[in-house]
Picture 1 (cartoon, rainbow over the protein chains, first blue to last red):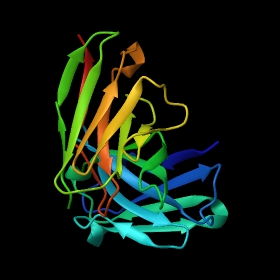
Picture 2 (picture 1 turned 90 degrees about the vertical axis):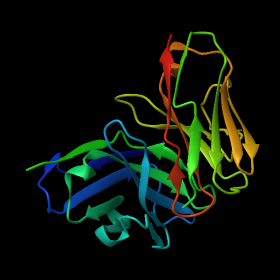
Picture 3 (picture 1 turned 180 degrees about the vertical axis):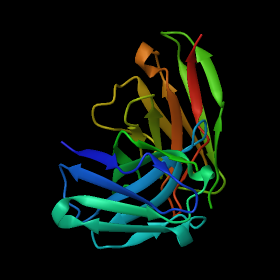
Picture 4 (picture 1 turned 30 degrees about the horizontal axis):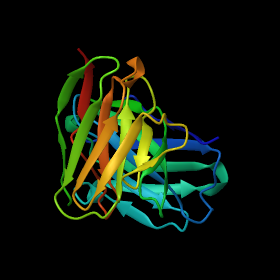
Length: 120
Length: 107
């Protein structure tokens, strides 16, 4: 059974760096084809893909946010960490992590998400 | 980036109704199209992948079709738990992109 859970601060100040952790079970990020991605949804808006990291440490980023994002994995802890620098109120959103397979190019298992508010 | 355009943006329907949602890609994406469902307070759920394959555990009243640039999600007979927001997502090339969503509301 695959499960994922996001954790991190619920409130950050403008210009601060956000660090989110995705802790998962039911799969290993050292297995061929496996990846974990981050997707966000601002209140009342659509889903937006942010980043993805694969078993071989291949990393993909949204071009519009690439300069602000870093995704890393800790295979031994079954965790993926996303950092986003220079946070702005427009980054207020629910942030999801999700399991993906390189061969399928979709997100088949998702966490429940964590709401991050950017406000002074 | 590939733009994904869904229609309608919202639809009102009743339990038992048949509903179809469309998704159009700004360029050919083969069959690299997925549909997911979002309900408040619940983890998003993958329904359909590779345009027409039903994800394990998803009821058979959900179906998907299409290839190239035009795709549809059909719910054959609405159940109360189907009132949610639906998104298409292309996985043909990075950056992955989603449609703007279709909110399915109870009439």
